Length: 81
Image 1 (cartoon, rainbow, N blue to C red):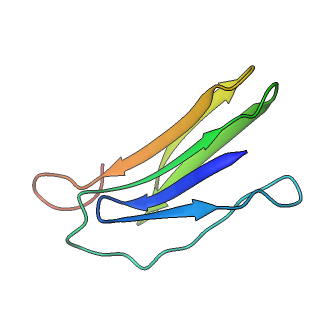
Image 2: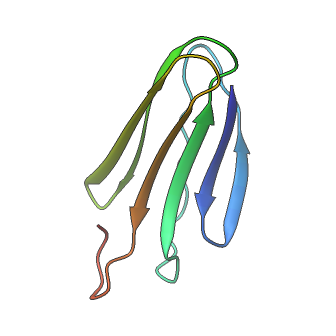
């Protein structure tokens, strides 16, 4: 599985281990978004999510080489959408 995650100014490579991937980053109030993308390598089924301040954005992908992409965006008036 090919995993990338981070914010608009900090992209990182993730590692799929024991059937899961979890990461925690410090919250940067200047970030416009936080995201995670995971691409299946052949067949599979995956759920992904990003949680900030108790709000969760979720996504799902299944089948060969599809991409699960979840993103939390900074709101125009503050907070996270």
